[in-house]
Image (cartoon, rainbow, N blue to C red):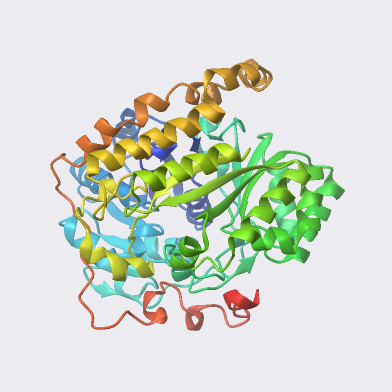
Length: 503
C-alpha cells in the first residue's frame, strides 16, 4: 500500500525553544516499510501545509496515519483526515500516539467517519497488522486498535527497542530540528517507560510502569548512523540503570563517536549515579533537563515527585561541578498569586540554570485528570499545551497571564536577550556558518509568541472539538484502570519494572 504518515504542526512552546524530529513516527514508518509498504512522511513542524496537499494529490495514499502525541493537535488532525477523505474517499485514515491512546473512542466519534481507526499504545507492533486488516478486513482483531468494529485486543508492547531503526531517510528539512543552541539536533531513544508515578504525568500510565532498554550495541550502531553533530536523548528518565548507561558509553567509546548531547533525568538518579553522567560529559553531554516541578516540599508532595528540595539543589550543584548546563522545569499552579510569582522570579534569578515554566494541566491518562478535570474552564483541545490555564486560576485570568508572561520574560532576558546573544556570538557564528538559523531566530521571537493578549484571545476562539469529561466516580480509579499497556499484555520474557521507590 501507499502509506503517508503525518506529524501535525508545532505547538506554542516549540515555536521558540525546540523542534524535535518525530522519532516515534519515524519508527512506525520503518515498521510499515519493513512490511513491504511504500511510505512517505510529512512533518508539518518543518514543512508548510502545501506540501501535504501536494502529497495527497501526487502520492494518492491508500492509507494515511497521523501522529497525536499532543492533545492540542487533535482538531488539526481531524481536519487533515477530512481533507484526505475528500481527496481520496477510499483512503484508510488512522490516528496513533500517546495522547490519543487515552481517548480513542471519543476522538473516533468526533471525526464523524473521517477516521477509520485509532491505534492505542505503541505503534511499531500495530502498524503492519493494521494495514493488512485495512486491506483485507478484520480491524476488530488487531491488538490496540479501536474502530467501528469496537475495541480490539489489548495493545502489544514492542518486544525489543533494537528495531525497527527510525526511517530518518524519509524526513525532509532535517536541518530544522533543534533544541536550544544544539542546532541542528537529531533524537535517539535508549529506554522506554518510567517506573515512577508522578500525579501529573501519563508516561507511567501509558506504559503500565514497564521499563525497557535498547542493547548498548544497537544504541551505539544507531548513533553511528546519525549525521547530525547534536543528539537529544528522548528517554523519560536517562540512566536509571547505571550499568546500561555505562554499557552504551563503552560502545560509543569503542567507535570513537563524539557528539553533543542533551538528556532528561531526575535529581535522585543523578545523585545516585554521578559517575555515569561524568563519563557522558567526556563523550559530549552538555545539557540536562531536570523536572524539578516545585521549589518547596509542599509542591513536590503535591506532584508526588518522591524527591526533596535538598535532593534537587544537591543535583544542581553536582551538574555544575560536571560542567553540565541544566534546564529546570517548574509547574505553575493556577492557585499562584502575585506574591508566588514574585518568589519564583527571585529563585530563577538566583541560580545560573535555565528555568522554564509550564502550567499545571490535567491530561487524560494522569491521576489529576480524575481529580481536577471536573473543574475545567475549557475543553478546547488547543489550550491543552501546558502554556494555557484550563482550570480556575486564583488571580483573574488576565492577571494570571500577565504575571506568567512577566515571569517568562524575566527568564528570557536572563538567557536569551540581546546581551547574552552578544556573549554567545561564537555559538551563533558556528551555527550560521553551517546555515543553521534556528537558534538565532529563537533569540528574538519571544515577544511575538508569549504575550498575555494572545493567550487571552486563544480562549475566545470558536470551539468545534472538545475533550471528553471524565465520568463522575465515587472513588479515584484503580491504577490498573489508567494503564494503556498492562504487564499481562507484555512479552512473557520481559521482567516487570521495579516499583518507583525501589529503582
